[in-house]
Amino acid sequence: MYEVDVDYEGSSKYKVKSLNYEVKIDFPKADGSIDGITPPALLLASFGSCLAVYLERYLNEAGIAFKMFFINVKSDICKETPRYLKVIDVKIDVRGAILDEKRKEALLRFIKNCPVHNTLMNKPEINVTL
Picture 1 (cartoon, rainbow, N blue to C red):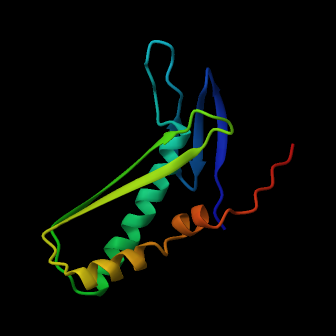
Picture 2: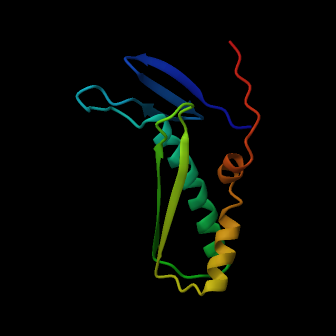
């Protein structure tokens, strides 16, 4: 089971704890200052890092040599309500790997099996209680 705790720290600042790790969450102030990652950016980070785990696993298990890879995940929150990330764009750059079209297609199919991608695609049931 996955579980996180979110602790209020005042003035739109929060501390997210999971296992022995913490992440600072914040929203930009009127002057543009910010002291942490925003919740939507954290969602994109979760998605990108999940894809990264599956990408690394695929490359290693397929014996594909690579030097480095980068994943860029970006989105805008739509202006209308309800507010949500309408389109998420992911760009992957695998440095040093030789991938033909067939291998690229197989790699993309494989990494789209990461749990975060599957969750976003399958509209999970969400239960919120007070």
